[in-house]
Picture 1 (cartoon, rainbow, N blue to C red):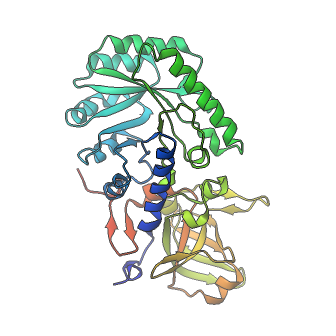
Picture 2: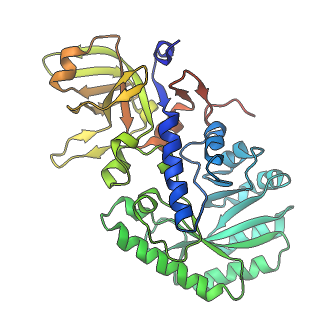
Picture 3: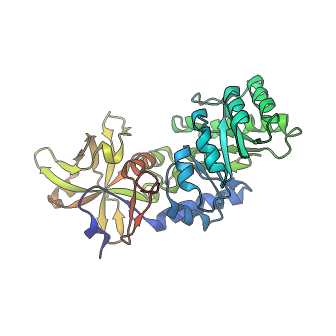
Length: 369
């Protein structure tokens, strides 16, 4: 039976071939540059897609929360890193997981370091997250006092083990000068490595963001790469130059429920609860919540004439349609929508449907507890 015959409501489709190609491309880049790829699994959040990644030599993975880390436990990962400033209220849960799984966390202040040192029951690694210009979180790159306070606390514990420095240059999403930001990031991590390597000879540095990792070839002496969105890509990444639209490996299948010929608009069942509400805005101020693709037995094709979601509400999506789409579309048809932000769309949907008609797991949709 065709996968299309299984769809009656908004459904997130995944093209396994494209997804594998995206993973392989980043794994090859990491290997070519002598770096370890530790992908951020906040995008895929899937056991099955994790198995695909393992086929390309990926042995460690990053989680965005302890909930996701718990979901990934028992899947054969050599280490799961929780890349979020650690929440000390979750130490009991961390202790439970660390009994059977190698874990590491992110520390950004001495208070957290001290609570971990006092209460950990099992060995856990940690990275100090540093801020070299993004401004969201992390110890400022020049704040050696805070870094050394954290390290002193860790030194007093036989459970809290320093692994190195983590840097997420998220401002690559907001500026065209990705090369300049990456040069700053490389220099920042190199400086920290030179400062602390004699005391901690095994320390590693990790940098992670898809726009930078996708376009950069010179990573300097950074040891590990931790991008996430590259697994699927999306319209935002295409606009940033990280990929082409043809590389995007997920799309939301939506049913057509009404057509307005006069306004050249198509109403679909697919809104904010399915796509989230990330938006791109063009030079004329037009909002784009996702772009239309045509579904077929083999997946989807990108039409020459662009149609896009001009607005969304909770369940509704309103497509501004091209003349060619208006000439062929019928109520009851299925259209595909390339997401603006695939991580959020996948999180909203909670599972995938492959082009072979197989359901694929996602942390947010699984009844795994």
